[in-house]
Image (cartoon, rainbow, N blue to C red; front, side, top):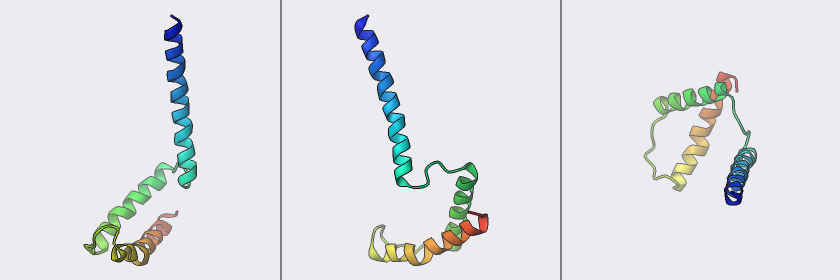
Length: 86
C-alpha cells in the first residue's frame, strides 16, 4: 500500500512539473498562448502567401533561402497580419 501511494504521488508531481515546463517554454519563446482569432489569421496569411509568393526552390537553411525569408516572406507576412488586425 505504501508503494502505491508513492507511485501515485510521483506521477502527480511529474504531471505538475510537465505543466509548469510547458508554461515556461511558452513564456520564454514569445507571446505565449495566442488567441484562436490570431491562429486563424496566421493560417489565412500562410495560405494566402503560399498562393501569391513564388516558391524560390532554395535548399532549406541556405543563405539564399534565409535572404528570401528576410527580404520577401517576412515583410509580406507582417503586412498580411496588419491587414487582419494583428
